[in-house]
Image (cartoon, rainbow, N blue to C red):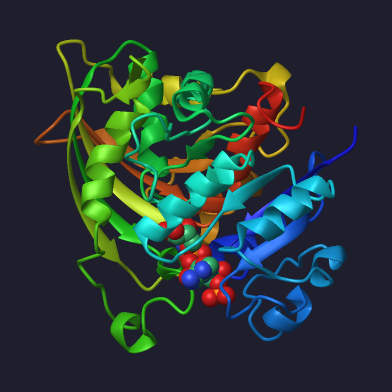
Length: 367
Ligand code: NAP
């Protein structure tokens, strides 16, 4: 099978680098187009990234020879499509919401599907916020989105904020098993890589905790409701529950967002043993899809009293599994637990690639 040529917009940033590392030997996709700001454009990727590459894993050697394009110059992307070097783009841009919104619309309007990590389009009614294991059926809105916008091949899908995966997958597993989740209280401990590069100044975060991340609590409280929502009249209507209250903190960890969560159920309440059984048996995606980056087990349970921990658990199963521990009764709600996921992989580039794999398996990409 010929690989689909893909582009990474924002290829020089924290998330863009993760895309290039994860796609270095991907069986379905091959990076043939990289774009960033006008500051990086016109130079070879190797030259732009000299001294800037942050990851232990390398990018594919051929990527180093690509000339970085200006992501704002759509004519270059259209030329790459015509030359057979670009089938769709991953968007990992950081340049202001309105500008990203307009640019992602322009790419999709030009027939280039956009799989985005940015928050700009998360509240566009006909754009799904996808977590592959939770709401794969939301891809059904793509033909409606294309029809409403008059787009032919292009479309936009986004993934949610990096802080919510560690609890949305387990919460969804409980809902799927028939338990209503009425209220969710969460305190997040978020890694510095979540702020991009160079991110939080070292003097602000070493020996410290910052109890504020701009916009993060609003995203954590609202995005889950769209993920759990339904397609009605060509848009995604939010679920009414759970009611969520979030405290989001920046902590001196490089990678891996931790979440301390309490849940209140409806009338029917699962026991702790039932919850553990639901989580360990949750498979999410049908095995026959065989998506290359899908974790074998999306939810891993640790029994030790002091797990999960970012350094020990963030890389489990290609850093795509969510690790849970400390599952116990809650004195205010019903149960509480601690969740952990790798923010720039499961919560960003890995989640974006898994969404692309799902879209390819469903026939939305590459034909
Ligand atoms: P970052 O490290 O700051 O990288 C930003 C990227 O955007 C760079 O490639 C940069 O290119 C490019 N850029 C900046 N200004 C631009 C402009 N005017 N025109 C075109 N390109 C421009 O940010 P990041 O952490 O990778 O985040 C990227 C996106 O993913 C953001 O929307 C963020 O909210 C989202 N996200 C991040 C995480 C995470 O854990 N970090 C998780 C989920 C979602 P230059 O190098 O040329 O400046």
